Every structure is written in C-alpha cells, then in structure tokens.
Image (cartoon, rainbow, N blue to C red):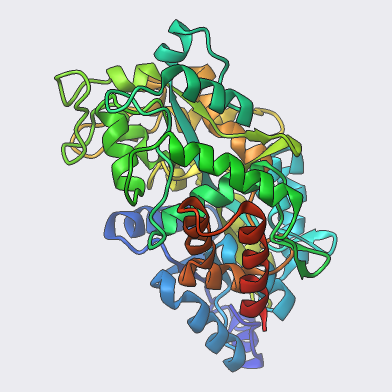
Length: 443
C-alpha cells in the first residue's frame, strides 16, 4: 500500500475511517492454493484490521511484471518469489532488505534453517524472508544397504562402494544418473553433485568451473553413469526403475515422497505386487547433505521461496503480515503442498520444533492421503529436512540469478557433460569447455 495522501488523512480525521490494504503477488495460483492464501489473509485481517489482496501471477511472467511495476512506481507491497530473483531484486532496489531483516531478527534468526537464510544474504542483511522450499534427495534402498553392511551413501566413496556391491544389471542398477542433455533434470542432478564437491559457478565475480574440483566431479559422475542403464535418462526412468525395485540409488526431488507410499495411482509401486503399498517408503533411506572429497561440509541442492517486502510497501503493515504468515498462518501455508513446501522456519523461540512437528502431521498424497509422519518416522523426517542447513545453489548467493536462468534455459552444462560421458572429451577438456561456455553467456 502506498503512503496515504492528504485526502485520505482528511477522511481519517473526519472519523470516516479507512481500512489499510496490502497487495500480495503470489505465484501459487492454483485454485486450491489461492483459497488457502486468501483464508490466511482473512485471518490476518480479523486479527489486525489490515486487508490483504492476494493477486495470482504466473511464475514465468513474474520477473517481467515486477520490472514493469517498479518502473511505474506501482510495486505490490509483498511478492512471493523463488530464490532466482531475490538477490538481484534487492540489488536493483525492488526489495527492502532492511525490512526483511527486521522481520527475521524479530522472529529469531536461530528459528530458521541456516541455508535458507544464507541464500538470501545481502550486504549484511537478508533480501527477503524465507517461507518454504525443498532440497533434492538421494534415495537409497536402506534394506539392501543394511543386508550388505554398507555405509549410508552420504559421501562419494560410500556411493561408489554401494555401486560395487549392488550393481547387478538388469536386475539391479547401482545408480540411475541423469544423462539426457535435453532435460533440466540433468542440470539439477549434476549441479547437486558439483556443489557437494565444492564446485562454485562464480568466485570473486568470475566463472570458476575450470578447476581440479570440477575435474574430480566429472570423473565421479562418469562412474555414476557407468552404473546406470544405457541411453538418455532423466527423472522418468530413475523413478520408474526405483519404483520397480531395480535401482539401488537415485536422485529426486521430495515430490516423490507420496509416490513411494503408494498414494498416487498414476505412479504405482510395482516392486511388491501391490501398487498402493507403503513398503518401498519403509525400505527407503534419504540423504540430503552430500559430501564430496573436496568439500567436507557437504551441500544440498535447494529450491527456496521467499516473501519479499518491496521498496514501495506500507512497511509496518507488510512486516506485520509476514510475521503473521510465519507464525499463526505458517502451517496453513505449508499445507498447500507439504511434500514440496518444507518448513524453513523450524519453530519459535519458545517452541523450537513447533513447525517441523506440525509439518510432519500434514497429509500428503493425491488419490489417498496420509500424514508425512505416519509414513516416515521422526529420524527419517529429520534427515529429509537436514539439507536445509546447507542449502545451496550455483550463483544465487553472488547475485547471478540471471546467469543461472540462462544456464538452465540453454542447458550448456549437460551438453558438455554428455560429450564427456560419450568419450568425446577428457574431464580436463570438459571443464575448460564449461568455463568458456559460461563466460560466453556472461557477455
């Protein structure tokens, strides 16, 4: 809401009253999700008297519309947006980092998962307030690992050890890697592996891909591909093989959580005869923090979303709403899609695990629904969420979201990795090719 003009002040002084109204742009535009957001807004209005107009915006139009609104001086008060834009928008003056930082500190920085905050760090502040997100997961057959006394596949060495012990094609593949260069999934999986090994996209403002860490990552990835079925593989084959009990390890987003439990008819569990069984969920282990030999801390590939307070906002009212959203309205917000909306705020200062525990009780599924915590025990839920502490992505912390968008659009990295897998390039040549290709995108 823009600052009230003289005419509005006169009305207020006359005692006619004028309700405050905030405008929130959201990319959660599906009808059921819009209903939940509007219900949250109504609860906020009942508590504060401040109305919130929730406006749906198609995600692929969000950047264009925000840029136009900024130029016209007509920004919304609040904008729900992905990590892709947050640092860049702060740098352009679209977002107000001081307002977001005030909210985070009032709620308690320690109540948030560290990685979600770090991705939004900007000049000593935070660009926006993290609301939810997900981290990519390495799924593995925990029962098979236990039977062979194999270490949990959280390190590159342990992953390779499991491949050595379990790879028995076509009955069982030790891994199913992404190898189809036309698919974004390839970029996501490879970036995850590279992050785990300490590979940065940008360092000190320059592309940093032609490094020993990248060469090591490429050689490791080739081992994964060699333990995979032949052909161009992407998310569909990795899921099908795992659901059929023919893959020991895959990388997938948490949107598979309900499918593993037989809750979606379009994705049946085919490994145990009954397509609705939760047996595969029970036999599956999860790793969110992968550790490469060049990065003892490890990393997790994450997609985090934020609530931004814009430079034109009614600051006090906007901050009140964001605090309400992350407290009284938080579990309602997460209920829109619990399997893809992990709680980036763990709890409150007084109840540190309040939202994690509440999230675990939210139902997931399509044709059948069950609470997450009814399918996966507390220790597994903890591992699923662990990646939020080390959530990372290429380029976003350094403010290169636009460059990352080009990488995903043109898929230059997967194309080069595929040439390496096919023997056209050595690992050293592939790393050098990546360096040149990304430098060209920056020009």
